[in-house]
Image 1: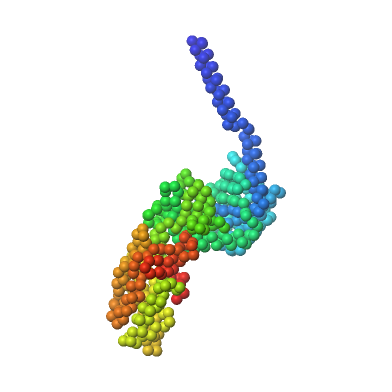
Image 2: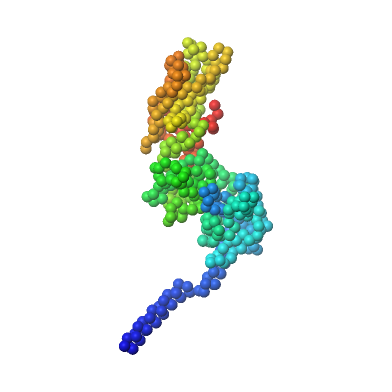
Length: 434
């Protein structure tokens, strides 16, 4: 019996010894030394960037959150220079503060802290009059620190902030490039399709500084959206949170040839089905969408149709130059075509608003407009007097494929051709000079 117990005790001792050796192999250095090495590495990385760091700063993960561009230069003497330009904290002017300090400390891992007040950086954590301000962090967990990339996580509000080395020291040019990228990609607040492996989703509201997401092919319902703060940079965009529980792509670089944003892991953002984009924002524009035929092949035919209508001798009308406006609008859940005729009758200037209901449908091949039917008695009466005016409405009938202007797929809704047997340009009516 004693021998049996001695064998068991021996086995337990051998097991504990093996566990001890495993622990030694996993943690071959004391915790204090490992912590100091992490601090030293972070300090060396942060001070190594010759031109400083581009920071995509995200104050928090609230539904109203957005990203902000900053440029930071960490000095080995403990001073830090911070520069920003935004409408929230710098009145859209370039503002720099070089008088504050920074440090890397240990708190269950390396912590980057801005430990004295910086007019630029601490503006986001200042409680202001409402006691909350922008709910920004000024202390961050350092999750990754390499010469190419630093990933931070706000200690209090948990938003991820991304830093990359600055390519040059021309700060006005940098901020101008960031603004240009924002305008080019999201100037009309349109839809983006994100493809990650076999999964797709819609992203929209990028112009607000945060994506809202929706399932691919589903309606865009704000109440069901998830929020992803986004910051435009000079070469693409940076998002604070990934698009999925196991996906943490932060950086998407702009491919100007293909009009796409691509992450290192292979995720792609593009305008996807442009006709879905057109349909969604066609209905979203309360001012309607005007037909702008300037420079297009159809302009001569369109003007000829208007002149035929206006110069009808029985009506004694005379066209006033380009006195017409043609627009597509939403009305009580349906689509209609509105044409404004401005003309002279005798010595008086006159204006007629003609309205046709139309059927507008979408499929994988494009947009189809059909059945221009007079909407009201005013239109019916006018067409009874001048039947040729129907030709102006009929110019919009047919099947069209959506094509972006200027090569900016993301901003296609701000300027889009509908190309088919005819070629027209559709723009937001509030942007058209008539």
